[in-house]
Image (tube, rainbow, N blue to C red; front, side):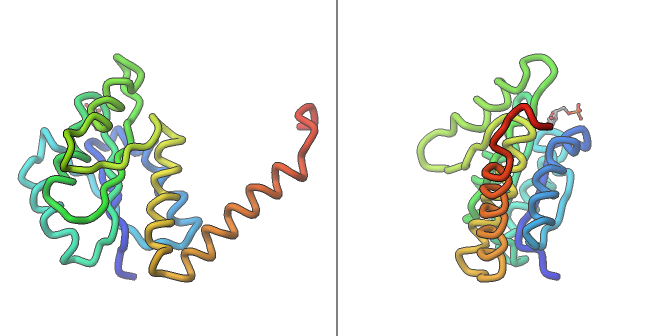
Amino acid sequence: MQPLVGLIMGSKSDWPTMEHAADMLDKLGVPYETRVVSAHRTPDLLFDYAKSAADRGLKVIIGGAGGAAHLPGMVASQTPLPVLGVPVQSKALNGLDSLLSIAQMPGGIAVGTLAIGKAGATNAGLLAAQIVGTFDDKVRKAVEEFRQSQTQTVLDNPDPRVP
Ligand code: RP5
């Protein structure tokens, strides 16, 4: 199936975080591709990837990176597609460096920044699916069902002492 979401990250070491975005895309039936594309170690690849993404049929790009996390901002500068940034939890500063690097874009180039770590990756997958759901009814329905099921799970388990 033609991938609609590009799930990229600065290093293989980001995968344990970014796989949560992949899990959500799988759950919601959104076709995606995934690649390591580093802003610092493979800058030419990053430019090629970002510049060709829209013509290759991608609709959204999710970029995860940690530390001096330039990946989502640099990708956003080279594509008209919406870019969602996931700050990976770094060892030295627990991801605060990643968060600020991704969130503090100058006005004029937008990156939709998610939370640090697993929750951010999960929500990046969810938000990408919601964007795809604006033109794909099947995906929109899958998002609605996911949310209904999540609500029902909370309502069915009101007592926090019950495991
Ligand atoms: C960033 O540097 C990556 O996104 C990763 O989070 C961080 C560390 O990369 P490795 O040294 O583990 O490859 O570019």
